[in-house]
Image (cartoon, rainbow, N blue to C red; front, top):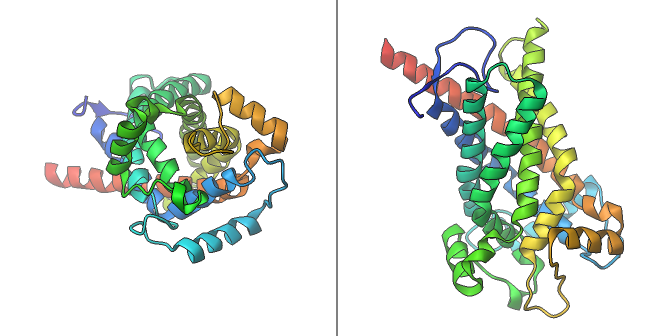
Length: 321
């Protein structure tokens, strides 16, 4: 498959160009997301902490952008910034990079292979394909996601209850050894659902927005066009994924050994307990940091992906000259 030429992709121009090998889209998709998460990771940590504030307490929790930056500042002061101190704004970066290397490489690459095989797909068909690909990719990457959430949320627990993983592989090893390998797929249902939604929102919306801008005749295939299309993609993804992201975070983070800690028997139980004690808006806790994180992350991933594709294409042309 890697050597098969590709005629179209969500990141391609409408103008004629040399056909790309399929592996270009897998490489650009994974590397683009990995590069973006280096910048967005601190906001992802803030998002997770905000989603856990006042869990099942019914207490009113501050919201809005002011709370995002207040939480960011609080974590930086109390825990620091570096990944290596087993706390702080960049703690969990290794797990985030590992997750993107698996999840994003699979979803971007496979979606664009599908688009190449069926270039005549309408919007509904594109969404269905994106849902299926996103769900399978998330299932494969779920162990990385469990480790990521636990590392990002570690500062939420009292010091004696923190897991203190040294990195992705330490988290995977200890989770399997201490809680059983099945625990690596804890929270798989909301994770898969979120991935279905985010893939169905991000990928088709970026391709459609970019195609519309290019076909209007007012935009060239340039960085500015990529930025506008990425912004549309990020906004759509943020709105549709926030509730399932809250459920995913809470299920993956729970510790059954701590007396009084929130315990959920299933994703639906998590939804029910959250709505019953915190109200429907409890499912939108962390919306501010989700928006602040998701939109710039989406912009960066598409911008990086476009530049990586351009680099790969230029190298390929140079080698053929």
